[in-house]
Length: 163
Image (cartoon, rainbow, N blue to C red; front, side, top):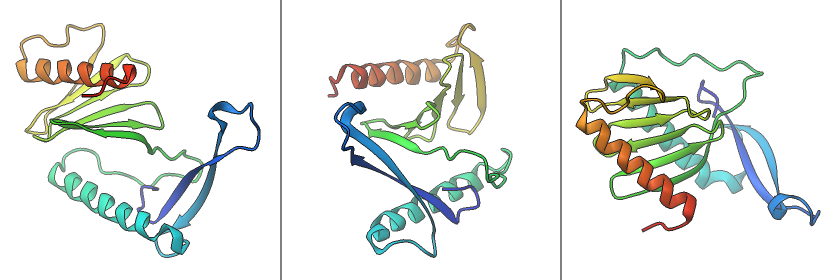
């Protein structure tokens, strides 16, 4: 969904007719507005609206961060490619390769795709970003615990051994 909250892209994976294509799937991307979309997307649009409203409420709670400005027409959409709900958190893998882990106590960990930075948002919405070369854990046991959990969940996802 664009930042203005009206335009969204629907990405559907369809079987490719070319047997040598990766995973035999091709992405079909269509663009719609929340006021004009095919009937077949009704349930998905309803979920999208609920998710958008939740994120807007969360942003209002943590005002102080820079507010979102509308995306320009040439900016790429960033979207959730995969998500996993666990006992303690929800993990999101975004299309720009960022990993976001949102813990149920409202703390978060963000991992950049180039593996150079890690951001931790604590329960009080205090945000801190470190370079992976820094001593990350230091004297913050809450961050250390969440970082261990993040590593454990990602390892399970990569090896396919999800508990």
